[in-house]
Length: 295
Ligand code: CAA
Image (cartoon, protein in one colour):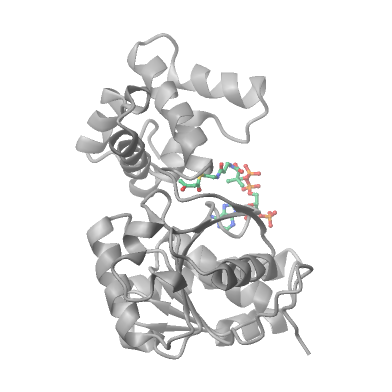
């Protein structure tokens, strides 16, 4: 039988059902990996039925691709399909032992969600957030059990990227921290642990780099293509910074820069005006067909 005791000997067999909030690119990736790798039942929650339907269709495509590439058997794919169910109400998460929230990157939305989770989930449930930059401590403070709240920051695309940043908030229990690390490991990921600082580690380093690429573009010192080629071929990045920004979403990049800037007060993090302008224009990147590049 499956045991999710990891090398650190943290037993998480009591985690029998995973909830995921948000049927966007991150939530879907997390739900997919949770079902596919840990083979636990996953409840995917989004307030919009259209979004959860679209999510299931997207996951079917991922499963078909993995079957076609002989990465998984058709039988395994069917099992994963059975493991993932959807709900359009928070109540649908009542029976879950860990919830990973991947809703919009907005403090008020996240606070409202965590207030609901506090009412709905059983006392031992782990309440994790995939926030890329909002303070875990702030989100935790919306609940009456901040010791159960933790950051679990996955990278995009979740099925491919091997890292999860685990971020305890000020009040997070050590047991919750160890179990969250064990869960991420059971999902096939490598964990790092970061204190609850703006941007954690990944975005504290990545976003100023992307922002600087926008500054070079804004100054017309090089074309977008040449900036990307420089970093892709010159430093062996899988994507250049501007392609990567489009891939992440320019709105997301800007939001994270603002968090770094506003929470540190350090001018070195000021968002590039050109990045702001693109977002103002509605150019949010690959997801809506127009960013630095046109898709
Ligand atoms: N979902 C699932 N799988 C995906 C995928 C997606 N959205 N996109 C690509 N893949 C899979 C492909 O299907 C392919 O799988 P196989 O090995 O089974 O063929 C594999 O990834 C490689 O894809 P491709 O061959 O099409 O393309 P590639 O080799 O150019 O890789 C990439 C694509 C993995 C995205 C690569 O370009 C890359 O690593 N880019 C950088 C990504 C990155 O830096 N991510 C972090 C962003 S920052 C972040 O996420 C944090 C935050 O808070 C903002």
